[in-house]
Length: 111
Image 1 (cartoon, rainbow, N blue to C red):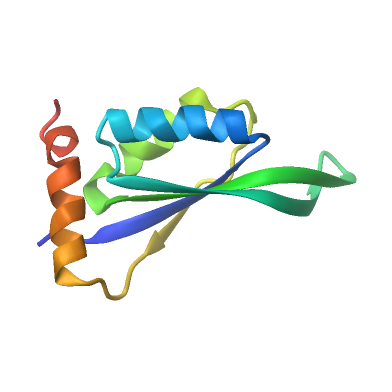
Image 2 (cartoon, rainbow, N blue to C red):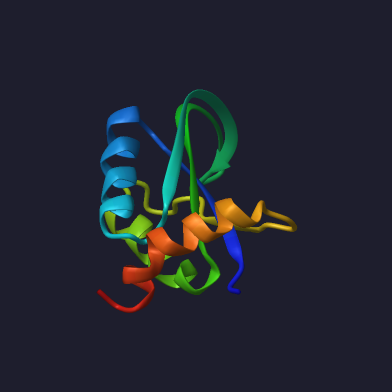
């Protein structure tokens, strides 16, 4: 069976994250998104040390949809360089994996 992956990204607001997350699920590019508000980030951007309040999104999907998920995130994102980190999953409950695969099957078949 195909592998499951997590895609980690961040958004500048809960509203933007929810809009993008709902679209990803509706398009069946993922089975689920977890949105975690309240993150504070410190990072370098264009030579300056920045601080930002962000929202984390964890996207649960199948490995074969990685490119499509990344493209959709970039298309819907307000950041010019969004974080898109693909995280392999070492182990997953078989029933959960079956659910994830079933919920992403239409997208995997190109619907």
